[in-house]
Length: 175
Image (cartoon, rainbow, N blue to C red; front, side):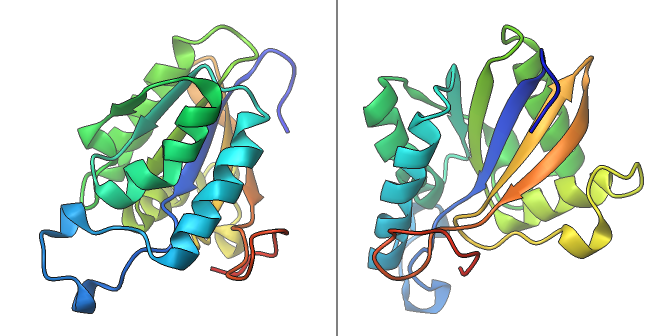
């Protein structure tokens, strides 16, 4: 995806969660649905293959749960980042991710999990400079945007579809 030497941020939108309307507890504690749990398994398996150097997540349970399989597979701890929480400033989230990526060795990657509003805002910030085409700025639950970071900025982006709602055996872009 990226030129040699880049660092990559695998920016995951949390997997499918229980509907807001049916959840009676605090929204931050809302869990994944059964479908989301299956998505998280596939996400963990796929992203373990990129051998990330770090994992960071919104403190929301649905984001943490999306990355637990990955953490178990890699032995890495999930670091919570308030900058990735729902309703936060996407520009601040992007700056935090770029700063974290720049601390990695060249060729290493970081996996981060956030929410649709934050990720959509990040993609909107990348549209004017031609990194993300306006028509491609989708953020289905369980999908990933791979962001190449070099010299303190995102130089390229690539979309990876979410695991399908079925058994999770293939990726098809449905969320």
